[in-house]
Each structure stands twice: as C-alpha cells, then as structure tokens.
Length: 299
Image 1 (cartoon, rainbow, N blue to C red):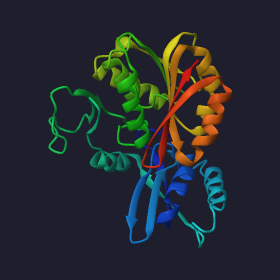
Image 2: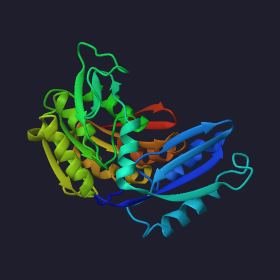
Image 3: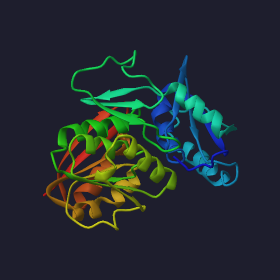
C-alpha cells in the first residue's frame, strides 16, 4: 500500500461496473491501488474502491492511466462508459474503517489474528494445532484476507521445512515472513521498498517473537541478495514477478521454488512464459477467487 503520513489524507477511487466486468476492472485498479480493494455487489452492478495516495497531490497521472486502461476492456463486458469517482478520506477514518472489517483468517495450520481481535475469535473457532500470528498491518499491505495472501500462506504451509532459507520480496506487513518463521524457517530476508512496510514488518516480527529470524532490507529488487535460498516469495504484481524471475532463479538452490502471486488468472500465461524463459521447470498453479499463485521449481 502507498505510504501515508500519520495525519495524511487518502484519495479513494471508486469504479462502478457490470458484475461481469468486475474481474477485469479489479486487475486494472490494483495496478494503482496495490493495497487491496473493497468490493460491493448490488443487483447487476459491482462497486470497487481502492486507496490511491496519502495526499491529493500527485493523483492526476495514475487516475489518467486508470481511465485509459478501463477503455481497453472489451465492449461486451462494458456496454456503457464506466463511472469513476474520487473522494478524500482522512487517514484516521480509513484506519478505523479498515479495523472494523478486518477479521481473523485461518489458512491450513496458520491463523492470522489482528491485534485488536479477541482470541479465541467467536467467528473462527480454535483448533488444537493452530499457529497464531498476531498482526497489526498499519498502512502496509497484508492482512491474510486477500486471496493472493491466502494462496501464498497455503504454499508456505506445504513447502517450509525446518531450517529453510526464504526471501520474501514485497514483504508488506511481514505476514509471509512471520508465517515462514513460525513454520520453522531458519533464515528469512524480508524485502520491501516502502518504509511503511519496513516498519510494519519489524514491529510485527517483534510482536510475534521472530525478529531474530528476520533480516529486513529496504530494496525494490532481489539484487542485494546472494545465493543460496530454498524459497523466494513474491506476492506483488505480474510485471514485477516476471522481472525478478531470472534473479530468483539465480538465488535459489537446485530444486528450490519461486512462489509468486498477485497474478490475475487472465495474466497467468504471460507470467508462466517469463518463468520458463528464466529457467524454471515444473510450474504448478493454484487459483482462488480470480487470482493465481504459481510455484516454479529450479531445475
């Protein structure tokens, strides 16, 4: 999610579209609102909202890009021009609204529990082998509720072995790094280019008593890292996943895996081509609610 000041103002972008166009619109909107979307369906209309930036300044360019991209959606999905609206939301109001809708989530043995939710959570009965992760994402992406995060958590639950060395590119709130540590990973590099995410990851690592397992790095690529790793995670966007594929392949041990998500299912083929070109084999795919997670093995 874009970084904001403590008393900042966010621009909320809302697009109304026919239900059949919701998947295409959400993929476009997430390119400028990577922190996730709020979706509301009423009759045959879907309303998608995301938060753009901490102040009104600098919003004109991404909004123009959004409107251009929306015009490229096939006419059979969008028979009439889409309505795009914006309004300003004080950061404190945004955070409070977010907390009201954020819930505890279970993926396999992992339970992501917001710090302000009780445990046991009345909406999520406890199980004997639950691994509880306390999380306060602040303004960083990653709460466990988004399909891409759930797909990555499920992949981690099946891939992490005691002592595994893991890179989490685009760590956001630190949710995947912390889950890896709680599952037994031995060394984790959590990488993000947003200082809001860096601070959130550090704070959440301390909160979950795994700070000694994490090295948090401010960077926008895998270049600062040296081999050899067992897993590289990238829950970001298709262009970044594809761009970093060759570097991920270089970093991994033989048989290591590049787990990548943030990929709308319609863009899965282009990412698979990039993974194959980078030298990966045995690409496995899982999908959830219109999103894909690919696990690519190094030969």
